[in-house]
Amino acid sequence: DWMLVNGWYKPHHTMLKGVFQKWRFVNGASHRYLGFNVPDACEAWAIASDGVYYETPRKQDFIALSLGARMDVLISCTEDAKLESEEPDWYTTNQYAHIFGSDPGFYEHHFMTVNITQPTDFSDEDKAKAEASDEIRKHLNAGSFEMDHGYFG
Image (cartoon, rainbow, N blue to C red):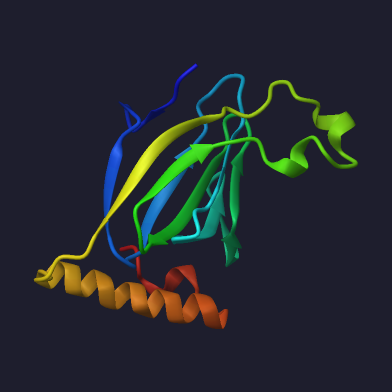
């Protein structure tokens, strides 16, 4: 059992410190769920699921994808982080355990490392990304973020 991210095995991905990126997760596994806790050094907001955009973004502490599912997420990190798929504690220890059982189960493995960089000299493009991320964060925290504000082209 192993997982690829954009065709790579356990890739390292570099992000600018505190700058949001839009990630699309697709669980292409035929027999495993994908789920991971959002690291403390990161914040994540789900903006769409299976191609349907939410009316308002949903803050995520845990991201879970069933077989064939997709989720679009805004993610920002302030420190290096490892993303590890794991079975959540609530999955088999609550009133729904008899429904879920443990098969097919969650894929449990380190699947990606995020490396954070904070360049001393931001390019004009990096400055624009940082400013846009500050604006996005302000609207997310105020509950006034809307997908048609033009943040993503």
